[in-house]
Amino acid sequence: MTGLLPEVEFLVEPYLSGSRIDSFLAKHLRNYTSWRLHRLVAAELAWIDDQPAEPHDRVFTGQRVRIRLVEPPDKLLEPCDAPVRIVYEDPWLIVVDKPAGLVAHPVGDFQEGTLSNVLQKHIDQQTAFRGMLRPGVVHRLDRMTSGLLVTAKEHLAHRLLSIDFQQGKLSKSYVALVAGTPDFESRMIELPIGQRPGGNSVLMSAQADARNRRPAKTRVTVLQRHPGYSLVECVLFTGRNHQIRVHLAQLGHPVLGDEYYGPFGTIRKAPRFDGDDPTEQRHALHAASLGFLHPILREWLTFSTPPPDDFHALAATAINKD
Picture 1 (tube, rainbow, N blue to C red):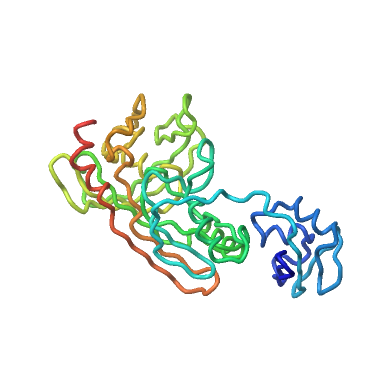
Picture 2 (cartoon, helix red, strand yellow):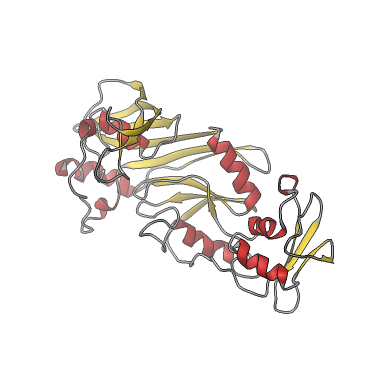
């Protein structure tokens, strides 16, 4: 640290060996663009093993790279407050129990007030200067789905965890309240899922005319049966968009409160959330358990969390609206 200007130093990891200095620094300083870092290097504000660096320099395993950050981050998430419970945290990861209604990260019309914005404020309190770390969402949950979600604080944890998740090296299960009573105790659903033809391409479909269909596999187990609805557990073996909601709806047992997916592949004509009823802020799908290999410590971690009260409230209200 020099005066009031933050000065940070990083050790070059093997997988980044040979990278240009601005690209290397952008991996570590994820709230800075490569262009901004390139400009700082060009202004003679960076060093490699205590030797002045130039913009075209490349860095190699074991070298120390130091930079003086005389300019603020140029893509910093706007921090915000929201009631999010942190289930687990260490220097590399944060596991949260996301409430329904909160978008995981900025996208489309949701550029502020997301989970990433909430976590940005949280990790800014852990560093001397705002923006030294940036939360990295490794996997997503639908906005109206609650439950467990893991984010990474720094680039290596994010990279390794993303690779593991892409290779299916995780365990994840959900619980859902569904309309009706399934005629099975446990069933493996293997119905390809693709984009719904025509209309809103965001919506998915398990129908034969879906576009760009890809294999999808979900195991559904009935946990409880009640008049008019059931509680089921869903274990994912693939990770398609809206997979659980589409598969359950295709069977004729849509998730209670689902905004779009109706029985047997039908699509509701208009969103049913009007904001007047608190139970209309979600559907009855909750990510109840999550297990994965810690990307740095290489220990298997397992977390679980019960559905919140607003999940159970749908059993008394959503059936009458279908």
